[in-house]
Image (tube, rainbow, N blue to C red; front, side, top):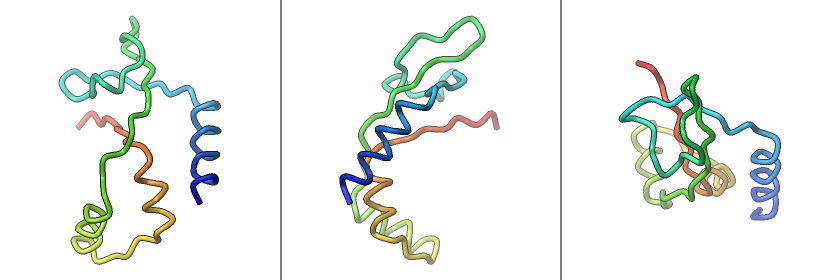
Length: 86
């Protein structure tokens, strides 16, 4: 499973622009690979995920779902932050 997950992320990072719009006081500084440009965009970098299996179990209990183990292993690899304007 690790090889499939690593291949996915390698491909994703190689073919994605990894660009995001900067939102002051919300954008995690440790995920910024470049400064914000004149139009408000920056290139982000992935950081290692910090959730453990117990974290996923708590979410499952809260939502009343059961995640496939393959999804958990994939999702645990990196932390992705998506800013919303609202």
